[in-house]
Length: 431
Image (cartoon, rainbow, N blue to C red; front, side):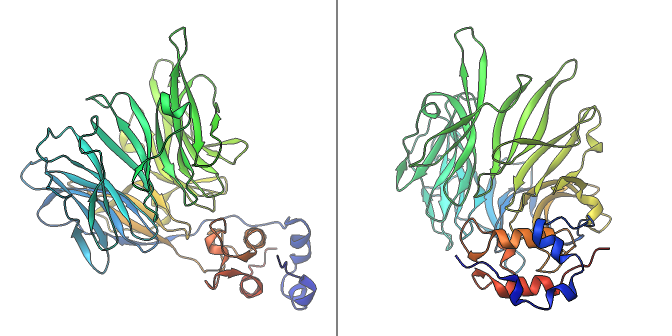
C-alpha cells in the first residue's frame, strides 16, 4: 500500500511551523475545542398525538413510529426526510393495528416489528421494508411473545432479542439472515441476553446472563459474527449489572452501558468507551448524575443523555468527543419552544440525531445536528491539526469499511495525496 512521502511536499515546512514535530510523533501543542451545530427540526405532524424517533442513516432518512390522536394506542411506522416529509410505511401482509420502524441501514433497508393480525396484540414479529417500501413479514408467524429489533444491514441481516415471557422476561438474542435464524454459539444459544448492536461487518454486540449453582446471576458482554469465535468478556466489577455493547464501530470499539447498584439509591446507568482493550468512563458520574450512551461513530464520538436520580429536569443530552464531555444544548441555537433532551444516533460524518421536546406541551420531535465545520476537520473539533492528520494517515489507501469516513476529504473513494494536500492547506497554526 502506498504511503505518503513527505519530502515531495516541499512547501509543508513553510506553511506549518509545528509540522515537523507532528509528523515525527504527532505531539504538537494543540488547542482543544468542539464545533457548534446547525439544526434541522422535524415538524410535529398534524393528526397525531405522539411521535417517537428511532434511527437515521447517511441519506438523512429518519424512521420511527407515531400514534394517532384521540387517545388510541394504535401506532404506525414512518420514514421522514426534509424533501418528502412524513411517509407512513405500509403495514405487513395481512394487516396490523400497530407496526413500528426501529432501525434503518446505510442503503435504506428498514426493520421493525408489528402485532400479528388476528392474535393478541402482545405477540409481535419482525417486519422489514426495502428502499421501495416493499414490506416483508419475517417468520415465524407466531413468535413466542415478541421481538425487539436492534439492527439491520443491506444484506438483510437483522438482529435483536426475542422474549418468551408476556412481561418481557427471558430474552434471547437472535440473528436473522439468508431466510432463516442463524444458529448461535454457546453460551448465547442457551442463556438469556440481547444483541443490542450490529456493525457494517456483521459483528453483533450485546450481553448474556447465566445463573450459578448458588443462584447468583452473572453477566458477560459478548461480540459475535458468523464464522468467527465468540468473544465473551466480563468487563466490570460486581456492582455493575447487565453490561452490554450498545453500539459498535467496525473496528470493534464500542459504547458500553451498564447499571450500577448504588447503596441507598438503587440502580443507575453508566456509560463506558471500550477501546478494544480497556474501558474509559464517559462521565460525569458524581452523586445522582449518571449517563446512558446510545451510539458511537468511527471517530469514537459517543452520544446519549444524562439522568439525575433526584431531579429529572436536570438531565441533558451529551456528546463525548476525544475525552471531553459536553452538553449538546450548549453547541446549538434552537427556537425557544424546542429543547433537546437526548442524543440518539451519531453518524460517521459527525451528524447527530437528537430527541427534542416542543414546549410547552412536551410533544416529542427529532432534530438533526450537522457540525458547522470544514471537510478537512476530520475529527470534528473545529481545528485542523495533528489529530486530523493522524486519522487521515491511519486510513490511507482505498476506502474500506474500516476507513474513517471523514478521512476521505474529497469523497473520491481513496484516502491519498489530494486529501492530505487539502488537509494541510486548511491547517490551523497553533502557537
